[in-house]
Length: 266
Image (cartoon, rainbow, N blue to C red):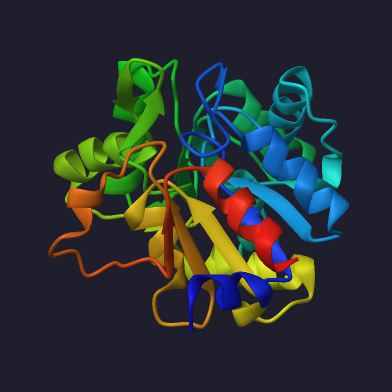
């Protein structure tokens, strides 16, 4: 099946943010035009970011400030996926959250029992205000038997002038200290795939995950029928695909190129 035929079968695009729609505070060329085209063509789409340093409301506001009138229900985030799991399977558990106030407030708003001592579960997010004392507490709790959950596995977050350590790096430090590995919930986990299928009511083969990172945005399509579209506007470069077990369905330089291709088939 050629690129244009693949694009034709997509009923919903799931769009990454960092490195795909924007890079830090910079809107990537053509990304807003792509969003407008999807609206014009009546093609469903949602944003999904693993970045748990903020929450959905923050990202909706950020996109609006960039010139696109994003609606609240367009924004999905890894915070929601892990909260959904805890609500469904760990409702009575005490949770220690290592993360920014945005993540903590999402947990509290969801009526999850967030504690500072003696938790049953330690949840680690992308904590940009990381304090050694809190990392030490998380390690102590995990050594004492608390379940270790990571909001998402990203090692680095792309910014305008490079990268900064992300949730996966913080979790790796805790693993190095405790010997315990976390279960992850953002892309590419089955938790995220199922969450999105439930939200959209679509089948995997009708959904396209679009992003710049092989081991999250593209890996979510491994072992199922979801379409994956790699854009080369963020972390991944063409040479990274050589020898990689994770391969996208389609590759474009940017959302601008995806828009141009989409206009030919719709």
